Length: 337
Image 1 (cartoon, one colour):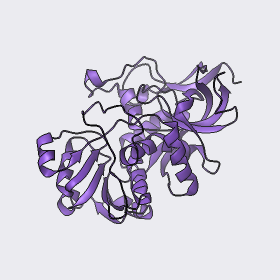
Image 2: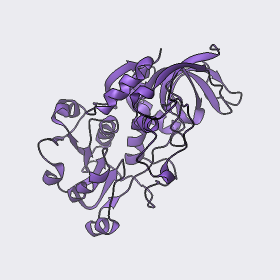
Image 3: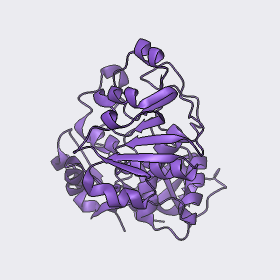
């Protein structure tokens, strides 16, 4: 068993990266249905900095509760250190990874030497995959999977009434991925290719070689031309950037096609219906079963996780500063041990 205390990153107030402090705190104790994981790596995601900032732009009705001080982080990979009495699918010494307690909480506690994890949110890490790449897969991989392959849950999106149902992908399907070099985008590109689709990747020019290497059939440098001006008749747009400008992609989609903004923007349902385009999204949720499917693709080499940069746990603030500069290729990760 570990010592009674551990090192963890905590924030006592909301603000910039400087509020992330390395502290000594008690090691958590797993509850029913949980294991204690000795963390080796942590994947960074936008909700990490949303939690750090206090989500100032989110309406109160959509804002989760925060209990300060909190340990951020939801994506972890490590080794099982202890198990609750009712846990039978995982044992001490197992290498595991997962997206923990999302979206119920943005304080998953992964920025630490140890974290407790519900077993339903974990998958066994493939032996040939290191902890950094496994941790980096969790949230981004599940987001791409739940948008494109299988939602895997019945929870509605907080931003729309319509349920998200992924379009079947296959040979002859044309998919445009906006923000294709980022964490969700580069995995979505690969999942669409795995299903046999033709993929158009949109990113800045610095990422062209990277994205063509992942299988992009066509590349558009958005700094030189607007994709909505040069692309027509795609079956599906996955807009991994999303937000207010996502509506511009409606003109690229053929009648009967779909637009999936990962970060939901402002749309006019009458306009969508007139154009014959389905606009839906979903809220990514923890799912160990789906992570097991993603792990198999990763182990087989069908899926690659790109690492933009890594930082030691103690330098979490520097990792958040890197994220704030944007133009990330793949994922940022923290190394713990």
